[in-house]
Image (cartoon, rainbow, N blue to C red):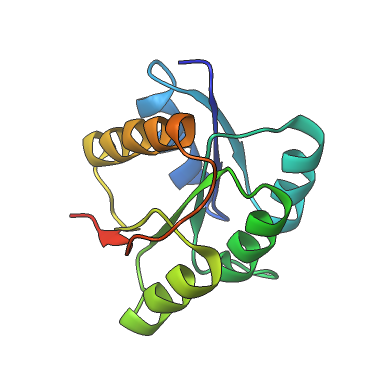
Length: 137
């Protein structure tokens, strides 16, 4: 797989953990904040998939994924959080058209499976999202 995946989380330990576990299967880049991630999308994209934490200082995951959708509509968006409520998940779907929501802690096997599905979706779809997001786990 040559498609790139961008992981965005303000917790460096989370990023390092996922990077260690997934780097052999995916082309991964990581970022610790949403503003820098948007710049990366502009300068280094395209990314097939972007996984974002929900709760981050500055720009939260929903605002980030909404802006990402405007800048890179073909990129598949995934939301990851340890403390999301149903309203946040609904907002993420309605505003950002997320592919799915993953709850932290997320096993690397689950994240790997979801990333593979998202890359396949990126390959075959033009960016029109009509289906409901699924809650993995």
